[in-house]
Image (tube, rainbow, N blue to C red; front, side):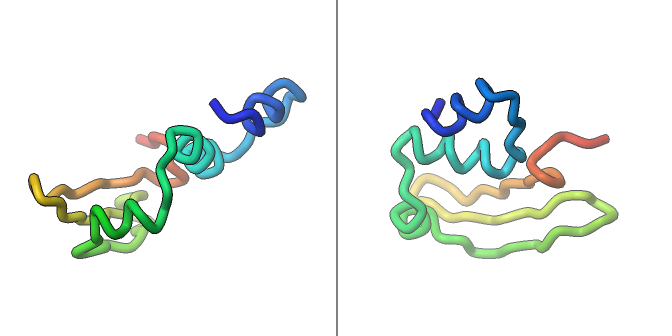
Length: 77
C-alpha cells in the first residue's frame, strides 16, 4: 500500500477505485510506459453503459488476453 493511500484512509478519506489501482500499481513498481511497450494494446472496446465495462485486448509473447474492466473498477451487477 502506498504511503499516500494509507494517509488518505487514516484521515477517513475514501479515494476513488481508479486512484487506488494506480497507487497500487506504482507501489508494485509498474511503470506505465514500460508496461505499454511490454504489453501493447491490440484492440480496445470503449465503455458501454449497457455492459457497464470497457475491454482491452493486449498481446504478450506468451498469449493474447482480453481484460474487461467493470464500471469505475468496481463490481456492479
